[in-house]
Image 1 (cartoon, helix red, strand yellow):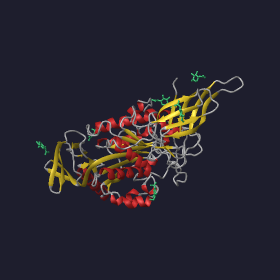
Image 2 (cartoon, rainbow, N blue to C red; image 1 turned 135 degrees about the vertical axis):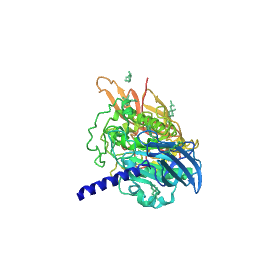
Image 3 (cartoon, rainbow, N blue to C red; image 1 turned 90 degrees about the horizontal axis):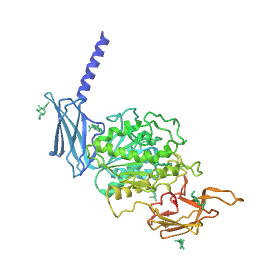
Length: 519
Ligand SMILES: *[C@@H]1O[C@H](CO)[C@@H](O)[C@H](O)[C@H]1NC(C)=O
Ligand SMILES: *[C@@H]1O[C@H](CO)[C@@H](O)[C@H](O)[C@H]1NC(C)=O
Ligand SMILES: *[C@@H]1O[C@H](CO)[C@@H](O)[C@H](O)[C@H]1NC(C)=O
Ligand SMILES: *[C@@H]1O[C@H](CO)[C@@H](O)[C@H](O)[C@H]1NC(C)=O
Ligand SMILES: *[C@@H]1O[C@H](CO)[C@@H](O)[C@H](O)[C@H]1NC(C)=O
Ligand SMILES: *[C@@H]1O[C@H](CO)[C@@H](O)[C@H](O)[C@H]1NC(C)=O
């Protein structure tokens, strides 16, 4: 008897509790958040009662800056408003009110800023926290000087269906502190994301919101929608067979198709964002490697279309998308999967942006190796240079600064001279030549030999015989018929910051390339 009453009491209490809590913001709206500034309109959404009227107001002190009203007229009870484009950073207070059956409920977000919101995603190299990188204590100590860079981290969740909202949040919108930036290994907050945002804030001088949604040991397929995988001939129902990561240092995360798209990206589609950065690819050296030149560009296109639709056109249709080209793993190369993924990350162009990946930018990282990393060599600790190279790309591509160099030297002309003994390579910019190493170029030899010699059908080393201004000459021996050339086509092409060629300011390495001659 007593028992039953207790249960009933509990039931009715929880019913009341559910009814009362129905009017609320979606999971990723909280105090301290940064909303996307002008020219876009920020989208705010949440839950309420069907039939209710909702108002959303922005206050500066007691002054109402803007007010929007909307009615919830269908199930499920979800409301959304688009704010007016906001120019000033704030801080503001955002108040949502629900008018329903004589009852008024009010929920408030304090200390809201308007600025640029960037999404950061990928696998463990994006997940690595500030406490895991070089100069960690210095970086953590400086965090408090950036109260206008705000952080949010989605929790690790996977789902077989597309979720409307995040099931869990690891870090609600927060000011940066040594505590929340240095919280353990591979947890939150992402060092690359943080540094990128901090550098951006130094440049732009207005608030930056950083949304981290990352999971270590995950392939591109997990972050891709069904639609986007189908474009590359991957059927939705295939479960991947990766149980353990190919890398001893990497714990594999969920690898099934679309499960992280469903749980960690799809819910975010209703947040107006400025752009995204991405550091992923290691896991695909072991899964659908040859398809990455399709799956990655398809992911970019699908995320763009989806954020555009999810925010009613307020997120730019071709929003800027930056990515990190794979760094290094093993000095003694086991296979050429790292170079292949690096190449496929550019849709086989070698540089970004390109015709298949417009409005993208790339941070080359093959020269930032770290053999001694306590997290395994696959997790290099220099994330400062990674983030700085991303910053240069963002300044040029996302913010349209024409004076920013953001791409390393890339060849635009190659001439095979003397019917095959040397090749002159003309780069698109002057080279800073510091550490010339042998064999970083190779040529493809395709020779039918005389009867007494064996045929050659393979890559053979080529030697740099001269390099000045923007011209490099490489020579090779013992091949009558050279039909291709490649540069830095190994997992670990050089020691730390000692690749042969950089932009003249020494910052941007010449990226790897492969080129087959077609005549
Ligand atoms: C909602 O607003 C409409 C028009 O402004 C009004 O007619 C209606 O009574 C309101 N409903 C509630 C529940 O306040
Ligand atoms: C992707 O690369 C593979 C080789 O790895 C090639 O066969 C294929 O044609 C390329 N696909 C695209 C879309 O470029
Ligand atoms: C969120 O975006 C999805 C996908 O475009 C859309 O179906 C849904 O209606 C949006 N929800 C809100 C509250 O805007
Ligand atoms: C770490 O700090 C030292 C001293 O300020 C600096 O020279 C070095 O470049 C920093 N390393 C990275 C990766 O930023
Ligand atoms: C190739 O470059 C060398 C300098 O390394 C130059 O002497 C030679 O004239 C060039 N040949 C052609 C055909 O451009
Ligand atoms: C060189 O290789 C190409 C590509 O296989 C072939 O078409 C051509 O006949 C070869 N030329 C000679 C001289 O062997």
